[in-house]
Image (cartoon, rainbow, N blue to C red; front, side, top):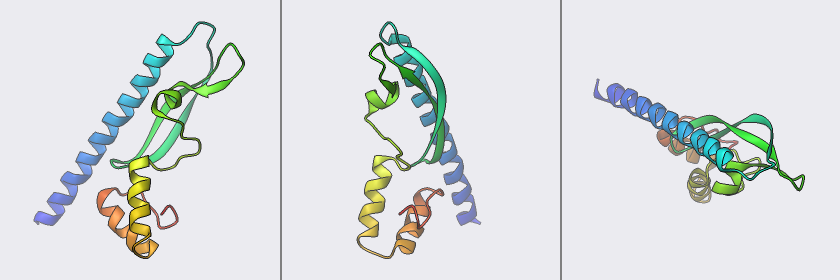
Length: 123
């Protein structure tokens, strides 16, 4: 029926948008590394998983050490710090808005229409 078809198309759309977002984030990280300052030492590549408007995404980013001995993720410096962030800023704002107006489980149900990766504990 139409509803199932619509649901499948929405899911495919989210998956494609998620792949594009992951690609963009990883490409930005690579570009920042290539343009990075001299003496920048790459320690490792770490995965980051968060819930965004396109669903749950996992991307890799470089963890590096500069000449002063400070450790950081280059993409965090460019996009804004997000230590231990599990939801994108957009999803946090939406979850907060809904959670202040209704029960967490109801807010989660509404968020699940947008993205499939939100639990009531996350709200």
